[in-house]
Image (cartoon, rainbow, N blue to C red):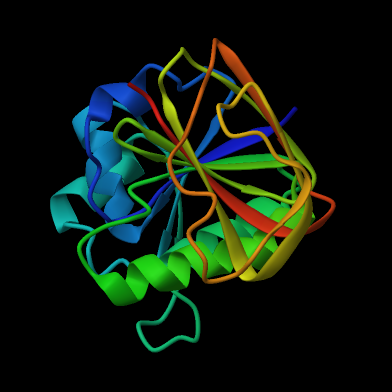
Length: 212
């Protein structure tokens, strides 16, 4: 499966987590200032795009020397650099997308980015955000998580109620249940072993897995 890894300009907690999961076959996209995360990790991106306001002249010159493709957009635009990166990945038919540096200190951007995932998940097979020890997924049908006993898993409905929610391998089991939007019922479930399964028949479910 073709996989794109997008580095955004948000905080990147515990860089070792993303470093260890990068595959040689991954297509690396740096959304503007996400270039600094690539530089920190010693990764040369395949593509840098955005309005480039957060890309230093020195780093831009380095990418050019390394024949990195660069797509520049005007500063006054209707999309964030991250959204432009997602649009590119979808257009190029990447079926799996991993996002790093996607969250940060600005609440407005965090909320916007998470809600953006609702539309993106319909166009790909797998969508994951890496944030330190956390893995964040938007699930439209089924997800399998591999971890260990005691790890926390939270299920949060996005935009509306999620119906037909099923869990297996979690302490508090759900069997065709409805999780209400704006309610906390699905928060802080616990893995009983090394694997957990989550399914939803209707709605989009934000699944936050905390690696212990």
